[in-house]
Image 1 (tube, rainbow, N blue to C red):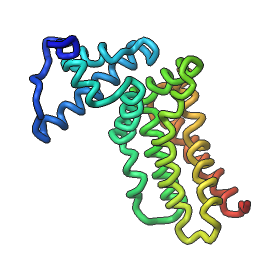
Image 2: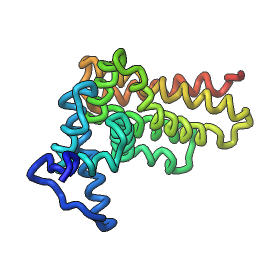
Image 3: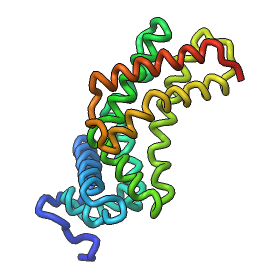
Length: 216
């Protein structure tokens, strides 16, 4: 038996092709283990061996899932966004623009201020100097959020797609930026408090005041 076949924990699973259900459970276990190790150790100190040990699988099993911890980190960020309800951005019920943007802001804040998501954001900030590409791992969820907001803004709006997309990008940053920074710095708790909601409502109104007359 090679070194890669060595079990890394008492919870190690048997080698073999798993059923679809078992494969799904393994995927969840690997990403949950990776999340725990990243949060506790930081990206720099986290290792594939430590993640495999936490998940109770062989290193070979883990490397079949991802080539390195960077790939795992991207998937962990995406999984958290999914669990926090980000797909709901594309399913907001029809209604007045202000109502739809308010719903979008609530979904965004629910994702970004989720404690584990916030812990990963702090990790990214802490390790950004040593790993410049780390910050790009959150670009995917942010881009999908902007896509969903752009779809909301584009309804019955004659302005060109680039203008709408720029507006969507600005909306996401306006609504989420301050709340994320204040929570990351420990100024406010990692939660959607009444104060956060009030600022979010104000941000939506501020955005709409400019959006209705803005031209590029």
